[in-house]
Image (cartoon, rainbow, N blue to C red):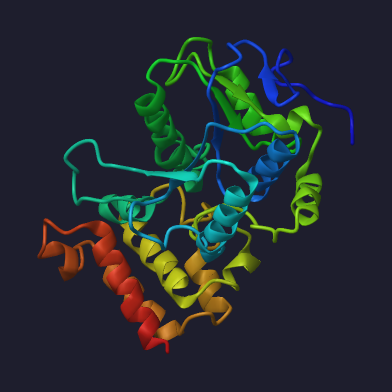
Length: 317
Protein backbone atom coordinates (compact mmCIF):
# COMPACT_ATOMS: atom_id res chain seq x y z
CA UNK A 1 0.00 0.00 0.00
CA UNK A 2 1.43 3.40 -0.98
CA UNK A 3 2.05 6.37 1.31
CA UNK A 4 -1.17 7.65 2.83
CA UNK A 5 -2.49 11.00 1.65
CA UNK A 6 -4.79 12.31 4.37
CA UNK A 7 -7.84 14.47 3.67
CA UNK A 8 -8.77 16.12 5.90
CA UNK A 9 -5.56 15.43 7.88
CA UNK A 10 -7.19 15.33 11.33
CA UNK A 11 -9.55 12.48 10.41
CA UNK A 12 -8.55 8.96 11.46
CA UNK A 13 -10.54 5.77 10.89
CA UNK A 14 -9.55 3.06 13.33
CA UNK A 15 -10.92 0.76 16.03
CA UNK A 16 -14.34 0.78 14.44
CA UNK A 17 -14.74 4.55 14.79
CA UNK A 18 -14.10 7.84 13.03
CA UNK A 19 -11.92 10.13 15.11
CA UNK A 20 -11.93 13.79 14.10
CA UNK A 21 -13.79 17.04 14.31
CA UNK A 22 -17.22 15.71 15.28
CA UNK A 23 -18.46 13.94 18.43
CA UNK A 24 -17.85 10.18 18.51
CA UNK A 25 -21.55 9.48 18.00
CA UNK A 26 -21.88 11.66 14.88
CA UNK A 27 -23.89 9.83 12.19
CA UNK A 28 -21.84 8.22 9.43
CA UNK A 29 -23.49 8.57 6.01
CA UNK A 30 -22.09 6.83 2.92
CA UNK A 31 -22.87 8.32 -0.49
CA UNK A 32 -23.07 5.17 -2.61
CA UNK A 33 -22.79 5.62 -6.37
CA UNK A 34 -22.64 1.83 -6.98
CA UNK A 35 -19.36 2.19 -8.87
CA UNK A 36 -15.99 0.57 -8.20
CA UNK A 37 -14.93 3.15 -5.61
CA UNK A 38 -18.22 3.11 -3.71
CA UNK A 39 -18.34 -0.69 -3.46
CA UNK A 40 -14.68 -0.90 -2.40
CA UNK A 41 -15.38 1.72 0.27
CA UNK A 42 -18.19 -0.37 1.75
CA UNK A 43 -16.06 -3.52 1.75
CA UNK A 44 -13.19 -1.77 3.52
CA UNK A 45 -15.54 -0.24 6.08
CA UNK A 46 -16.75 -3.72 6.94
CA UNK A 47 -13.19 -5.03 7.17
CA UNK A 48 -12.37 -2.27 9.65
CA UNK A 49 -15.66 -2.83 11.51
CA UNK A 50 -16.90 0.69 10.89
CA UNK A 51 -20.67 0.43 10.49
CA UNK A 52 -22.34 3.36 8.70
CA UNK A 53 -25.65 4.69 9.97
CA UNK A 54 -26.99 5.05 6.43
CA UNK A 55 -25.99 4.15 2.87
CA UNK A 56 -27.69 6.48 0.40
CA UNK A 57 -27.92 6.01 -3.36
CA UNK A 58 -29.40 8.71 -5.59
CA UNK A 59 -31.29 7.38 -8.60
CA UNK A 60 -31.13 9.60 -11.68
CA UNK A 61 -34.89 9.57 -12.00
CA UNK A 62 -37.76 8.37 -9.85
CA UNK A 63 -39.29 5.48 -11.81
CA UNK A 64 -37.31 5.78 -15.03
CA UNK A 65 -34.69 3.11 -15.38
CA UNK A 66 -33.18 4.17 -18.70
CA UNK A 67 -30.88 6.93 -17.48
CA UNK A 68 -28.00 4.85 -16.12
CA UNK A 69 -26.27 1.83 -17.57
CA UNK A 70 -28.04 -1.48 -17.14
CA UNK A 71 -25.09 -2.76 -15.14
CA UNK A 72 -26.00 -0.22 -12.44
CA UNK A 73 -29.52 -1.61 -12.00
CA UNK A 74 -28.31 -5.22 -12.31
CA UNK A 75 -25.73 -4.70 -9.57
CA UNK A 76 -28.15 -3.31 -6.99
CA UNK A 77 -29.54 -6.71 -5.83
CA UNK A 78 -25.97 -8.08 -5.66
CA UNK A 79 -24.90 -5.22 -3.42
CA UNK A 80 -28.07 -5.32 -1.33
CA UNK A 81 -27.50 -9.03 -0.60
CA UNK A 82 -23.89 -8.35 0.43
CA UNK A 83 -24.94 -5.49 2.73
CA UNK A 84 -27.47 -7.72 4.46
CA UNK A 85 -24.82 -10.42 4.99
CA UNK A 86 -22.40 -7.79 6.33
CA UNK A 87 -24.92 -6.51 8.84
CA UNK A 88 -24.91 -3.08 7.21
CA UNK A 89 -28.05 -0.96 6.80
CA UNK A 90 -29.92 -1.44 3.52
CA UNK A 91 -29.55 1.11 0.75
CA UNK A 92 -31.75 4.16 1.09
CA UNK A 93 -32.82 5.37 -2.36
CA UNK A 94 -33.47 9.03 -3.12
CA UNK A 95 -34.37 10.76 -6.36
CA UNK A 96 -35.07 14.14 -7.84
CA UNK A 97 -38.42 15.76 -7.17
CA UNK A 98 -39.52 18.84 -9.09
CA UNK A 99 -39.63 21.84 -6.75
CA UNK A 100 -41.54 24.28 -8.96
CA UNK A 101 -43.75 24.52 -12.02
CA UNK A 102 -41.75 23.46 -15.09
CA UNK A 103 -41.08 25.93 -17.86
CA UNK A 104 -42.10 23.49 -20.59
CA UNK A 105 -42.96 19.94 -19.49
CA UNK A 106 -42.79 18.06 -16.21
CA UNK A 107 -39.80 15.74 -15.80
CA UNK A 108 -38.38 13.43 -13.16
CA UNK A 109 -34.91 12.57 -14.41
CA UNK A 110 -31.91 13.99 -16.24
CA UNK A 111 -33.07 12.53 -19.56
CA UNK A 112 -36.51 14.06 -19.05
CA UNK A 113 -34.96 17.40 -18.14
CA UNK A 114 -32.94 17.37 -21.37
CA UNK A 115 -35.98 16.52 -23.49
CA UNK A 116 -38.28 19.02 -21.80
CA UNK A 117 -35.83 21.92 -22.16
CA UNK A 118 -34.22 20.86 -25.46
CA UNK A 119 -30.76 20.79 -23.93
CA UNK A 120 -27.98 18.35 -23.02
CA UNK A 121 -26.35 17.42 -19.70
CA UNK A 122 -24.06 20.05 -18.25
CA UNK A 123 -21.01 17.85 -18.71
CA UNK A 124 -21.44 18.18 -22.48
CA UNK A 125 -20.87 21.92 -22.00
CA UNK A 126 -17.86 21.19 -19.72
CA UNK A 127 -19.67 22.49 -16.63
CA UNK A 128 -18.16 20.24 -13.98
CA UNK A 129 -20.89 17.65 -13.59
CA UNK A 130 -23.53 20.03 -12.22
CA UNK A 131 -26.04 17.44 -13.47
CA UNK A 132 -24.61 15.06 -10.86
CA UNK A 133 -24.89 17.72 -8.17
CA UNK A 134 -28.56 18.33 -9.01
CA UNK A 135 -29.70 14.73 -9.35
CA UNK A 136 -27.43 13.10 -6.77
CA UNK A 137 -25.62 15.41 -4.34
CA UNK A 138 -28.52 17.76 -3.66
CA UNK A 139 -31.00 14.92 -3.17
CA UNK A 140 -28.71 13.11 -0.73
CA UNK A 141 -28.27 16.39 1.18
CA UNK A 142 -32.03 16.79 1.30
CA UNK A 143 -32.48 13.29 2.72
CA UNK A 144 -29.77 13.78 5.35
CA UNK A 145 -31.42 17.02 6.49
CA UNK A 146 -34.80 15.31 6.69
CA UNK A 147 -33.32 12.47 8.73
CA UNK A 148 -30.87 14.29 11.00
CA UNK A 149 -31.90 17.94 10.87
CA UNK A 150 -29.03 20.33 11.59
CA UNK A 151 -26.98 17.68 13.37
CA UNK A 152 -23.53 17.52 11.74
CA UNK A 153 -22.63 14.20 10.12
CA UNK A 154 -19.63 12.46 8.69
CA UNK A 155 -20.23 12.15 4.95
CA UNK A 156 -18.17 9.35 3.40
CA UNK A 157 -17.52 9.62 -0.33
CA UNK A 158 -15.69 7.02 -2.43
CA UNK A 159 -12.96 9.08 -4.07
CA UNK A 160 -9.73 7.16 -4.60
CA UNK A 161 -6.21 8.50 -5.10
CA UNK A 162 -6.86 9.21 -8.78
CA UNK A 163 -9.75 11.59 -8.03
CA UNK A 164 -7.60 14.61 -7.22
CA UNK A 165 -9.71 17.05 -9.24
CA UNK A 166 -12.97 16.19 -7.51
CA UNK A 167 -11.36 16.31 -4.09
CA UNK A 168 -9.86 19.70 -4.90
CA UNK A 169 -13.36 21.05 -5.63
CA UNK A 170 -14.46 19.94 -2.16
CA UNK A 171 -11.42 21.56 -0.56
CA UNK A 172 -11.88 24.83 -2.48
CA UNK A 173 -15.34 25.50 -1.06
CA UNK A 174 -15.28 28.37 1.48
CA UNK A 175 -16.03 27.13 5.02
CA UNK A 176 -19.56 27.57 6.29
CA UNK A 177 -21.15 27.80 2.87
CA UNK A 178 -23.38 25.51 0.87
CA UNK A 179 -25.82 22.82 1.98
CA UNK A 180 -24.94 20.86 5.07
CA UNK A 181 -22.02 23.22 5.79
CA UNK A 182 -21.31 21.69 9.22
CA UNK A 183 -20.92 18.17 7.85
CA UNK A 184 -17.42 16.75 7.56
CA UNK A 185 -16.69 15.08 4.23
CA UNK A 186 -14.28 12.17 4.44
CA UNK A 187 -12.64 10.27 1.57
CA UNK A 188 -11.58 7.01 3.24
CA UNK A 189 -10.09 5.44 0.11
CA UNK A 190 -7.57 8.26 0.01
CA UNK A 191 -6.92 7.92 3.73
CA UNK A 192 -6.11 4.26 3.09
CA UNK A 193 -3.94 5.03 0.05
CA UNK A 194 -6.12 3.16 -2.48
CA UNK A 195 -6.30 3.95 -6.19
CA UNK A 196 -8.74 2.53 -8.76
CA UNK A 197 -6.71 -0.63 -9.35
CA UNK A 198 -6.52 -1.25 -5.61
CA UNK A 199 -10.29 -0.84 -5.37
CA UNK A 200 -10.85 -3.45 -8.06
CA UNK A 201 -8.62 -5.78 -6.05
CA UNK A 202 -10.61 -5.14 -2.87
CA UNK A 203 -13.83 -6.11 -4.67
CA UNK A 204 -12.32 -9.26 -6.17
CA UNK A 205 -10.92 -10.33 -2.81
CA UNK A 206 -14.41 -9.99 -1.31
CA UNK A 207 -15.79 -12.40 -3.91
CA UNK A 208 -17.94 -9.78 -5.62
CA UNK A 209 -18.08 -8.93 -9.32
CA UNK A 210 -16.93 -5.50 -10.42
CA UNK A 211 -19.80 -3.02 -10.80
CA UNK A 212 -17.96 -1.05 -13.48
CA UNK A 213 -18.24 2.70 -13.80
CA UNK A 214 -21.34 4.48 -12.56
CA UNK A 215 -22.64 6.79 -15.29
CA UNK A 216 -25.63 7.68 -17.42
CA UNK A 217 -25.87 6.00 -20.81
CA UNK A 218 -25.72 9.40 -22.52
CA UNK A 219 -22.82 10.83 -20.49
CA UNK A 220 -20.26 12.88 -22.39
CA UNK A 221 -17.50 11.10 -20.48
CA UNK A 222 -18.20 7.83 -22.29
CA UNK A 223 -15.55 6.61 -24.71
CA UNK A 224 -16.74 5.86 -28.27
CA UNK A 225 -16.22 2.10 -27.89
CA UNK A 226 -18.62 2.08 -24.93
CA UNK A 227 -21.46 2.91 -27.31
CA UNK A 228 -20.83 -0.40 -29.07
CA UNK A 229 -22.03 -2.20 -25.93
CA UNK A 230 -25.30 -0.30 -25.51
CA UNK A 231 -28.75 -1.77 -26.17
CA UNK A 232 -30.94 -0.33 -28.96
CA UNK A 233 -33.17 1.46 -26.43
CA UNK A 234 -30.13 3.27 -25.06
CA UNK A 235 -28.82 4.14 -28.51
CA UNK A 236 -32.18 5.60 -29.51
CA UNK A 237 -32.21 7.61 -26.30
CA UNK A 238 -28.93 9.19 -27.37
CA UNK A 239 -30.21 9.96 -30.87
CA UNK A 240 -33.40 11.62 -29.65
CA UNK A 241 -31.68 13.71 -26.97
CA UNK A 242 -29.02 14.96 -29.40
CA UNK A 243 -31.57 15.71 -32.11
CA UNK A 244 -34.04 17.52 -29.89
CA UNK A 245 -31.34 19.76 -28.41
CA UNK A 246 -29.99 20.93 -31.77
CA UNK A 247 -32.18 24.01 -31.98
CA UNK A 248 -30.55 25.44 -28.85
CA UNK A 249 -26.93 24.38 -29.40
CA UNK A 250 -24.68 27.27 -30.34
CA UNK A 251 -21.18 26.30 -29.19
CA UNK A 252 -21.24 22.49 -29.23
CA UNK A 253 -22.57 19.88 -31.66
CA UNK A 254 -23.78 17.10 -29.40
CA UNK A 255 -23.24 15.06 -26.27
CA UNK A 256 -19.49 14.86 -26.81
CA UNK A 257 -19.30 18.63 -27.18
CA UNK A 258 -17.28 19.56 -30.25
CA UNK A 259 -16.39 17.15 -33.01
CA UNK A 260 -18.35 14.02 -33.85
CA UNK A 261 -21.82 13.56 -32.41
CA UNK A 262 -22.67 10.31 -30.70
CA UNK A 263 -25.40 9.89 -33.30
CA UNK A 264 -22.84 10.15 -36.10
CA UNK A 265 -20.72 7.49 -34.41
CA UNK A 266 -23.77 5.24 -34.03
CA UNK A 267 -24.52 5.53 -37.75
CA UNK A 268 -20.88 5.14 -38.79
CA UNK A 269 -20.58 1.95 -36.75
CA UNK A 270 -23.88 0.59 -38.05
CA UNK A 271 -25.33 0.27 -34.54
CA UNK A 272 -28.75 1.47 -35.73
CA UNK A 273 -30.31 1.57 -39.23
CA UNK A 274 -29.06 4.74 -40.92
CA UNK A 275 -32.32 5.46 -42.77
CA UNK A 276 -34.40 5.21 -39.60
CA UNK A 277 -31.89 7.34 -37.67
CA UNK A 278 -32.23 10.05 -40.35
CA UNK A 279 -36.02 9.90 -40.08
CA UNK A 280 -35.94 10.13 -36.29
CA UNK A 281 -33.39 12.95 -36.41
CA UNK A 282 -35.56 15.00 -38.75
CA UNK A 283 -38.58 14.49 -36.50
CA UNK A 284 -36.91 15.45 -33.23
CA UNK A 285 -34.61 18.22 -34.47
CA UNK A 286 -37.41 20.18 -36.17
CA UNK A 287 -38.24 23.61 -34.79
CA UNK A 288 -41.74 22.44 -33.90
CA UNK A 289 -41.88 19.76 -31.26
CA UNK A 290 -43.27 16.34 -32.27
CA UNK A 291 -47.00 15.86 -31.87
CA UNK A 292 -46.51 13.63 -28.81
CA UNK A 293 -45.40 16.76 -26.93
CA UNK A 294 -47.03 19.52 -28.95
CA UNK A 295 -50.53 18.12 -28.55
CA UNK A 296 -50.17 17.32 -24.86
CA UNK A 297 -48.84 20.23 -22.79
CA UNK A 298 -49.43 18.17 -19.62
CA UNK A 299 -47.15 15.39 -20.83
CA UNK A 300 -44.38 14.06 -18.60
CA UNK A 301 -41.20 14.21 -20.66
CA UNK A 302 -39.97 10.73 -19.64
CA UNK A 303 -43.26 9.08 -20.55
CA UNK A 304 -43.01 10.44 -24.08
CA UNK A 305 -39.28 9.79 -24.38
CA UNK A 306 -39.22 6.19 -23.22
CA UNK A 307 -42.37 5.29 -25.15
CA UNK A 308 -40.64 6.51 -28.31
CA UNK A 309 -37.41 4.74 -27.42
CA UNK A 310 -39.28 1.48 -26.87
CA UNK A 311 -41.18 1.83 -30.15
CA UNK A 312 -38.00 2.42 -32.13
CA UNK A 313 -36.18 -0.47 -30.46
CA UNK A 314 -39.06 -2.78 -31.39
CA UNK A 315 -38.78 -1.68 -35.02
CA UNK A 316 -35.14 -2.74 -34.99
CA UNK A 317 -36.13 -6.22 -33.85
